[in-house]
Image (cartoon, rainbow, N blue to C red; front, side, top):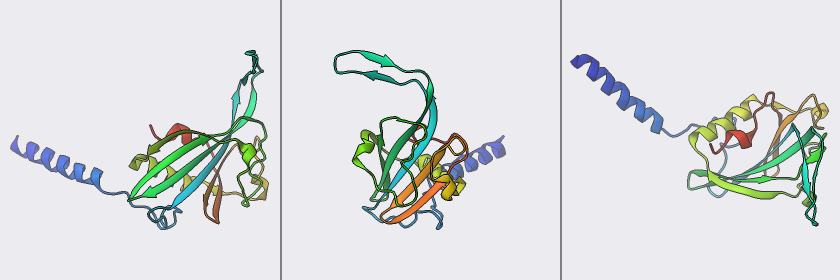
Length: 180
């Protein structure tokens, strides 16, 4: 009985230390070189089936039929005093396919209409998700630049003049994964 208590105690103590260890960011990650005060911008464009509703200035509500829309989201990751935070923005829906990401020379345009939705501090779990998507994504080739039915989920990571444009297989949407 005493031995089982001792084993339980050792496992629980070392388990709590393991959970409190700081997250190690791999040297291959774009997050590795961030210094205090630096930021990264993540743009994610994905396609979903949706029904769009419009409210007019006169109070009329128009509902369209279900169709595919591309959704563009922007995440500004900031590092300050070893803490990572995110400012999350959304853009108006655009009819599929969305050609906002025509390549790595991306420049945000005012007509993208980004609107700030929320701001939150990233947990270690959130950082692990960002690192996993960066590792899982495959570098986009010219064929991948237009969002089509064949590649419906892309992630661009921008740090000043450094870019990574990644095609993400699967339904890994940052807004659904982060801040939960």
